[in-house]
Image 1 (cartoon, rainbow, N blue to C red):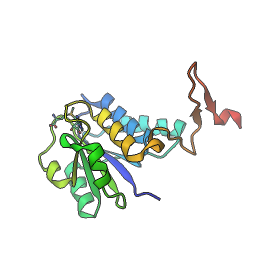
Image 2 (cartoon, rainbow, N blue to C red):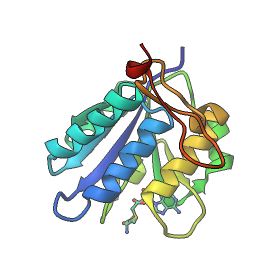
Image 3 (spheres, helix red, strand yellow):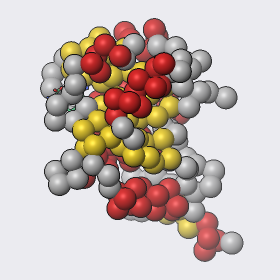
Image 4 (cartoon, protein in one colour):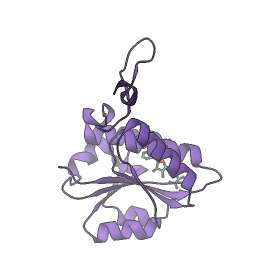
Length: 179
Ligand code: SAM
């Protein structure tokens, strides 16, 4: 049984970031995170949307609004591992083998402005290439490397809808209809 993994999104602005932040949470869920933690504005509607995806496609992504820096400090003070995704960090393929897997892991992604303390509090500052791009891309590539194939090929035991990947057309099994 592996330790839990959560994704913390700092500096969320409800008026500007809902789409990209929803995508971030969907990547977190699809690739195997246990929880998605939002710091900044509260957004119950986004959490409802995420819960509705889990209702249909399975899994139990926990969603919680937290105080960003407070949560991060508490996590590290309690022995957790914090991994900050940043273009200034160490290349992710080099960093991953050095990250402990026997502790709960918190992956921190920034918003418009990342407080300097984040770099000091997190034990790992990790880059997915040293160019500025997107938190969604950075999270997906990091989690794919962290979990290997079991990340992007994940299915959930309690899914109602299961998609069978095909080259031509949609193949969706609705397990409720098949009962
Ligand atoms: N200007 C912001 C700052 O002060 O760092 C960064 C904004 S960037 C659009 C939002 C987030 O995407 C960053 O905080 C980081 O988590 C992630 N990100 C962007 N490029 C990255 C990269 N090359 N490697 C890892 N993470 C990256």
